[in-house]
Image 1 (tube, rainbow, N blue to C red):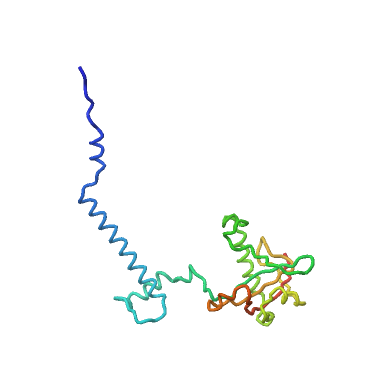
Image 2 (cartoon, rainbow, N blue to C red):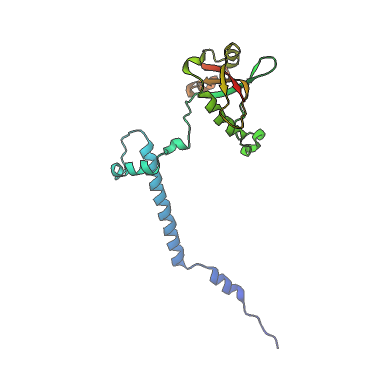
Length: 203
């Protein structure tokens, strides 16, 4: 006598299928959540923009709340592209100055960002730069920063402010204006003016 096993495949498919009503309800929930966060993002973005002719419904009443809830604004994630470029330099045995920057962080030498020394160097550089008084900076009008550093005879004596320093001995610090977008075709042939300072860091 031959016994035929019941077909379980069709039952499993039926169990896996979501009723049309549930699918529709899930779709409406997803749309509602998406719209909700788009509205929140729109209000957060608009409160950080300069004054303009566009005013969102209820914006005046919500603006204070939005600023309290998101105080960092977009400046938390971005940096002004017009800020001066800050670079740290070191001199070799011949007295020639070369860039000592470990950044960009995504370079292969930084293990594509896994090595955090490049970020630590930026923090250390910022603390060292705070010891440079405004009158100590030397203008470098032609933008030849290495040549301007070579002309500095009186370095600023500084004790390292960090427990595990990366920058020791004689280092150069430069600030250089960013090439305006309108002159982008001149990149590589035009150097913007800057200013330089030399530090003698004790570690």
